[in-house]
Image (cartoon, rainbow over all chains, first blue to last red; front, side, top):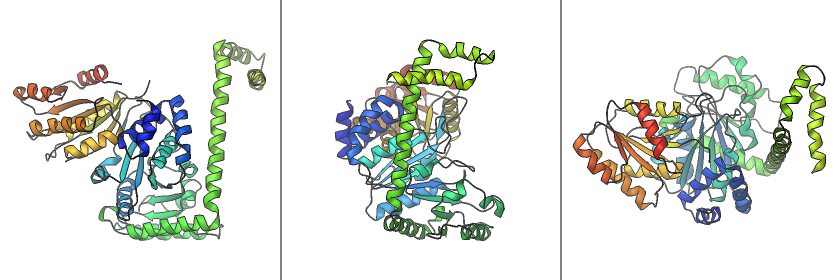
Length: 315
Length: 131
């Protein structure tokens, strides 16, 4: 089906059209561009919540509960759940939906699973595109569940408005919590599995880390939850809403979105430049011969770079 | 278009035996496919809704309880109702030979019974997927 027809159908709530558009923006860069141009005017309305944290922390279960709470208030919720792609086969097991089984039939919910496909920041390369489709489709909350993260997969900050960092007891001492990386990006900290031994201690350690924060504007709250039992979800949802209020009142909402758009445009420019330069170099097999020049010490890497970049003068 | 084949592996009905489904999911993963696994005890309606949202190329169902004659055709029927005509539907599990013809007539394109090599199934999917 033509993408324009799909967009029309998606805009009136057709889930299959929405799914087909996501497939297109995830797989076909040229089509993706056309689709994003077409739907741009309908985007920007959704509030985007990132759920991140280590593997097995309960991100999917927590997502399930947050979605249910949001839907019960009359919201339409889109979910993008990301799981890792095998670096060997390129295949993946996308299993986040196991925790969200009874959401499949909810008319106000759309869930899509994605593999990382070699992308390392905790998302997949085209998560942002899929997000735009769901946004245009009228889902006013969109939850992005990242892959299980370690210490530095922080790309979620580039697309989410509110980031919920899901922690669990027993993952290390208090020095872990003052390291740089993922511990810095949480807007809200959810200590899941709070019924387990060590949860209080984890909460104390995270709180102490947060008390050291220099940004006096806002100190991220810590919420204890037991996602499987639906405990603490209301508190978490309240904190999410408080964060939204804070973002809007402080002007940070616009600031974040502007910064993210800047990054996005710069990324797109880089990608296009790379294509132009590589197409020039590849067509003449120049790279192979230049590499030999570098190996033989006739040229250095920067000289070769400058020669390749000359193609840019001609466009 | 060079993209991974997307497969939904589903367990319809009430039996809790998912070892087979997991072995299949793993084999398809290793064959470079994106496998959406939804867990146990799915209704045909849930399976179809998931297939639509995930825009899968293949729906693979596993049943060991004997309810295949009811549940497999129901999924095929619901997919048709939703206008989903580009999905390859396959099934597996403990399925008597006598039932296979009927299931095929109901739109289940192939049935894989115990002992089937996973490589055979992978080959079948690669040769028959429509996209």
